[in-house]
Image: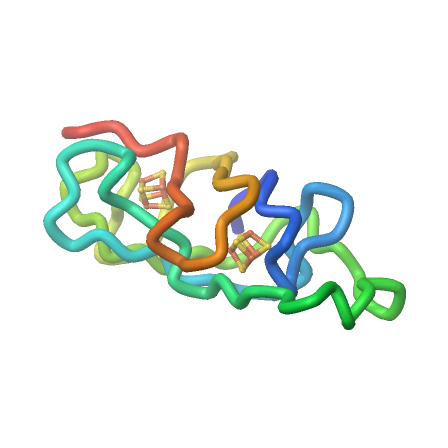
Length: 104
Ligand code: SF4
Ligand code: SF4
């Protein structure tokens, strides 16, 4: 399990800079820098209709990751103790990224 902080506040799954999903998928199969990764589990909270009042932020979750050239990638699973997902204002998954990515 990986601790996760996420500042993508207009993602449907975000509450208090945390993710409310129990697992996410990070994309970026050919990524050589963090800008080429993204959170594939992003869903835009269109119009802000859904508030996160009934959701529980998960302080740690399971992270599957396609960015196989990252030093933390272990057989398509993230082995980092803590990661950051960024992309405040994102309206598409491609506008998010894993800030912890490091080229191996
Ligand atoms: S962008 Fe990804 S990590 Fe952040 S809240 Fe949404 S699903 Fe969770
Ligand atoms: S730190 Fe690396 S392995 Fe973990 S989610 Fe980010 S890009 Fe994937």
